[in-house]
Image (cartoon, rainbow, N blue to C red; front, side):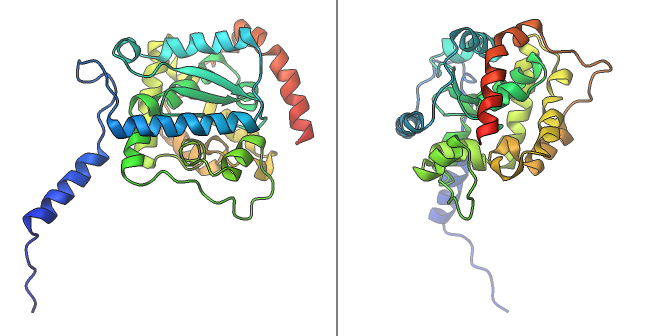
Length: 278
């Protein structure tokens, strides 16, 4: 019978360092001003470069009042300690894409598809999607994935029907954007984003139970949309995981706010036209 040799001290140290590297402290948790790590600056630079390529290939939806409205929602779900402590400043970009998606770059830029803005039923639901994407930024999930070697652009494979954003991400091989939008950061990070996102909508003054109805709304809309929905928010298994952990729905779900209805009126018309052309 062979005896198992103990691990050498350097092997143990390497394992410990690897484990520490996978755990990244969230922004604003240590009471000090936030300073990005050197490799985090490289990650942000990579994300900025990929965003520029993405925006060369995908049109944005130009609606200043709607953009200002979304910016105000982002401000409500963002803890004061994030930006005051030197963390990334969240900002929203609306992509002219009728598919169901929202994803955040690690530098705080949140890309929201017009199709997602059109699909939600209430302001609280939209707030949760925004808060949840920002949770990935605040928890630095992209950095943890980057250090673990899990940031990569998947191949388009046999997919022949793609929306403009998915076509740009896969066609240009944009790994940071692909991880945020298509593959995600792993079950643990996704569950953490669920918790932090719900805390964000509560902080912003919305009912988290009403907000969490967004997952059933998106799941219901998937039935007739077909293979075009390639993003995380368009995957039945991903939505099912969100539904399993969502709080119980309120007795009387709130209707859409008057402001949401007013702000997105033009977008609903334009997105419907784009959806017909897909």
